[in-house]
Length: 357
Ligand SMILES: *Cc1c(COP(=O)(O)O)cnc(C)c1O
Image (cartoon, rainbow, N blue to C red; front, side):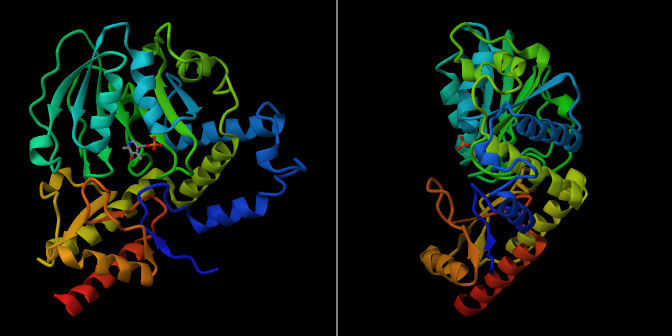
């Protein structure tokens, strides 16, 4: 089987080793005599998988026991609602920094459940930079950010300074660099970009912050889910199993520190080339705001974009079309993308520029 380089923004590529291990174990897992998809979430075999995945995540991300780790359904979009429903009292304020598509969507969703204060907004800069001047009122439950804006390609190199619990959507950059989990009150992330496949969403939350409201749906009630080890209802079992395989793979590569090193090599390779030519344009020109993970760019001659993308696909470089709200091209360089994939993309870009520039 010949596989391509897949730059899809999400769901995203998986390492070959993970795909083939899942394939080999699909009909019968270990001594289960059944597929992981066919066994009870309360069986000893699955509880073992659950505990191993939880333990590996805590090890790989260095998560202390002050934090609950939940494996939930509903995506990051579900968490945009669950966060205010678990962290704010009725009518309390929460502050949101709007730095792109996903933080804006999170604030819009939260507005249905709490009083939202916009602490900063870079809409006037078309989300090509991070808001700097922040206004955060007193009596605010938390400050929410999307640490990496997957559509607009801006990422915090340093977290904003605040005394409030920081709530961060890490859907597109979780486990791509070393972080100190203690700097956060809550982290949430869908698995389908860096840690596996769609259908399971991680919530890593400091236990003392959990105060669900009376009307919080039970499946998103962190207290209920924590008490029942994410099994208040049937959890996404196959997705949790696959995250375990992905965490094993990350460990084999040398852990998150090794991921961080290769991820910065990957983004540097692409950005160095983009900065060396006028044939391609980068919307994010404040270098300290540039995402290492999602890199949007445009062809200076916009009418060439369709040809460029068609040529990419012919060369085995997939999933490069920009998000519908911004257009152009976007290369997503998640954990599974090898450096060789980015080198192949840059090589193709050079060739296209020579032929059409
Ligand atoms: C992909 C993504 C989302 C949406 O995740 P769903 O699983 O579709 O709900 C939210 N936030 C960020 C930063 C993302 O990259």
